[in-house]
Length: 238
Image (cartoon, rainbow, N blue to C red):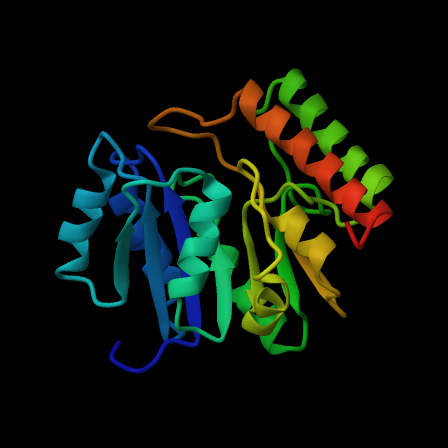
């Protein structure tokens, strides 16, 4: 894996010590047909996720660990990884094993066939979230509805944390991104002009180990981001 990667997968982590090795094994296997790198961007996890990943990287070429000591947040971690990535195609997914790594080749193929961004969608036909309780389903529905009504984004899963995009699309908006909270996809969609978006359905798995990062703060940050994006659309020169 000494050749320059065409694909860089950025994986923000925090307290995923129980999952990170299994994740890296499965992601590298799915990406075997491609020259690739996986960048673990860890926010100095107290459970030493970064240390476990560094040990793994010693015997698995194409694995890079970026440990952040003074910053926190999924959105900013993604951008930190993008800035360090070497591939012409960039991707994002979680290390908690809830995203289906088997659709990674399909997402990359979408970019190679001309799309600017390819989204792993839980809500497209063929996808699903079988184990979510009603209140999480309601929250997801409301988030999708607000994205449509407030900022005019009509993808089936604007809150997806699993997507692949052309580097040039990221560079189009890198200077203007202001990540708030956990979700960066919606902001990228609002701050760029992708000519073609494709979606690949997948079934969202139930977390087996570790704790979910969903909290009231995540919802608050999402609403704050929507308000910011709406204001900028209404007052573009502000």
